[in-house]
Image (cartoon, rainbow, N blue to C red):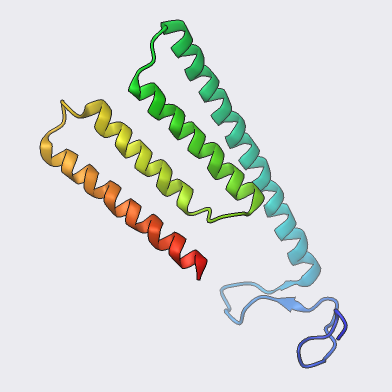
Amino acid sequence: MSAKQNSNGDSKAKDEIVGVDDPAIPNVRGEEAHIAVGGFRLIERALLIIVALMTVGAAAIEIWSVYSNRTITLADILLMFLYTEVIGMVAVFYTGRGSPFVYPIFIAITALARLIVLQGKEMSPENIVFEAGAILLLALAAVVIVKAGKT
């Protein structure tokens, strides 16, 4: 079967309409759709590179701050984990390997844990329980997403 034949063996026109039968979604001709998708992918890649550069810059500023202060706090370490997870998320989006939806969940879990650690003694106990519940809910969501991706 040639590349221009569908599963029924019928020939496809070069400018076949791509889309669904929803009147709210305009039908786009094949070549135009490829150009549009390519443009969006290019924009996505450029923004991912910008996010990675900004994250590396923020990590460098944090490292310089730790060096200047000559002290390392738990907040600094947790912040570096956040930066590491953002870089990991960019790598997953850029390479297309893995589930890109899990990394924002990991970032949210780390951010909530950092918040609990930094404000633990000053926060009311019920707020700590709510944030711990949010971490548990996010962890369950990550497990569901990973399990769903394997099937």
